[in-house]
Image (cartoon, rainbow, N blue to C red; front, side, top):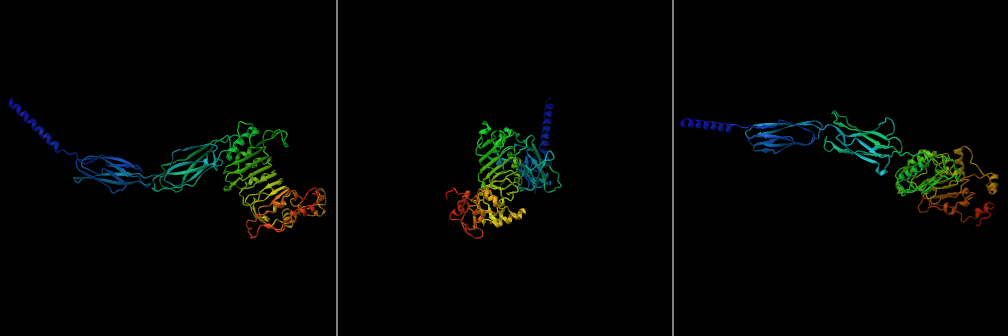
Length: 543
């Protein structure tokens, strides 16, 4: 029995030793957890498990691939870092794992390129119907790797898209095909049209053609709220005044809780007013806006003041640094508008529709930036004009270039003072010749009956009627020279002109463009000659 147990024990030991010997001789070999990696175009970190009992080294010729760790003594988890590509085509490389025994294993790395793309984070932009000029913009970041043009199409098919536009775009693709955020700034205009919103689709059209299919090509929908509804009523006038005040960025705003006729600078039609009708009683008759700061044409909402006769705008901040137009709003109230003041607004031009204000009797464009008097300011366009103020407006030129003003027989006041006009005051011969050329008939002359009716001396008969209704002609503060013509010295209304200060007095501070010192050679010493000539007309005046 003992021998049997001993033999069984010996056999167990032999088997166990054999088993241990087999375990020691068995090897796990050298292997990688994957033989290939597919990487996206952007930077990525990929994991590869190295299985071995040997030391090893990983190498690659591709500078855009990093391995960490790049060597080891046994099995390890290895990070394969693939940098972002800078091209649109795909690229390939191999990573070689060399083991101490001399065996090598290869990892194939394939990275896709950046396809052309135009991507937007937001596909819809919603706009208010109004904002100040400085706030009327929005920025869109376009994630892209292609240059593009911006196009705008009306969603409804037809209609203007001029109310929204993009500014110049700065493309900086400093990393090849790798997409970058490109900022596109859009400027927009207020929506004054009520009822419907405005919708446009903004597209980003690639400039250069490519054979690659686009990964994305997004568009942008822009929606703007409809404008404020302003009805043709007293309440509508109130809304229009508030909107104009807002648009001008006035330094004050009337209290909307007050009655309209109590608002500062506002006059409404009363039943006792000349020209009052059942339709205009209670509506705005006159509006004055003073001290504001705008960089835009006159507000759109002016057109809603259907019964206004007088509009006055005084003192736009920093107006001498601005270059503005009137816009077309006055055209829509042309039937009733008689007096218009645009003082120091920063105007450099009048809208083409401005010449349709045929019923204007009073126009002041003083202290603006025209440089020259706009050609449309003439009797043909403004046949009812009585008072015209073009002073202190940096106007310049030879006075003979403005001959049309000296044949404008409806004028009662003409202010051309404090400008840079030079040359002579046109003579009676020059004015009458101009009139003949322009009208095809001789300029009217004073008749014997005129002399009787107006208490003019008999010798005035036969003289040309130059500015016969003029009660105030101002030419002072210019660079005029030469002789004061007789039609000025003996004008029937010179008595009212204050000519010694407001006409004869010129700016002698610097010479005119021809090198002449401003001033007249025959300025009267006193008015005695005048009262002697008009002794019947002004016989009761003390001089």
